[in-house]
Image 1 (spheres, rainbow, N blue to C red):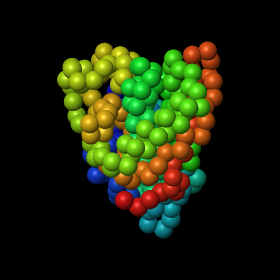
Image 2 (image 1 turned 135 degrees about the vertical axis):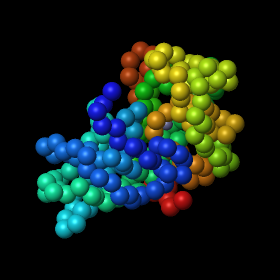
Image 3 (image 1 turned 90 degrees about the horizontal axis):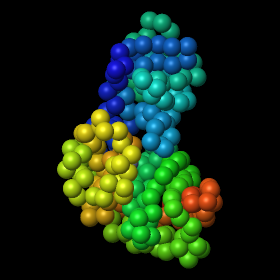
Image 4 (image 1 turned 90 degrees about the vertical axis):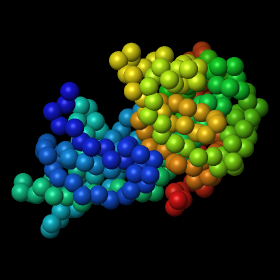
Amino acid sequence: MPEIATEQVHLSSMDRAYERSFDAKIVKRGDDYVVLDRTLFYAEGGGQEWDTGTLAWSGGGARVTRVDKKGIVKHHLDRMPPPEVVDVHGSIDWPRRHAHMRMHTSQHLISGLVYDLFGGVRTVGNQIHAERSRIDFRPAKFTDEDLARIERETNAVLARALPVRIVWEKRSELEKRVKPDRANLDLLPASVQDLRVIEIEGMDACPCGGTHVRNLGEIGRVRVLGKVSKGSETTRIEYELEPAGATVP
Ligand SMILES: [Zn+2]
């Protein structure tokens, strides 16, 4: 167990993922990073990129250039605060974060639809970026018609503006209502029993530690850009969103 656990406020509920600024205390320092007692910055993980933003303190401030969590959540800065600084005010770059939330929620929907439409094709990887994201499927060899179908079916569901929720659920309960390979439950270590499940109402339920929108209506439309073969059985699909930039919920 890490000696310092940063409270990741943005992961505690769907609504708190919409907060953009916060007060915190520095509890540890490294060469180019600080560890905070609490944060709204998403740390890179699960295919989703980190949040950027600023930390401000009395008399100064710095850019948060990268956030990772190898044991502890490290906020990497372009300059370090003076040694006496403890209290900081953090602000995340909201357009980037909201783009990640829209992209990540789209990924859940696309992955679920592809599993259903193509007879159990699994998602074996994903990379969520603000401008363009990608999902790796296996076993899959999509035709251009297949890609058009994925885009059409995804956009038909997005147009329904379904709510998205976080459900805290026992693994044994989730296993009763979803196919384990559809939600990649069979890849989770046996020690993981309490799950944070992201549920798109009536469409999908999948354990995930990322940030997501609370309604599909925030996403707009998905445009499937193309496919890349990543081996004999794996196909990568790339997609972007329209509108491309962040919308304000
Ligand atoms: Zn997710």
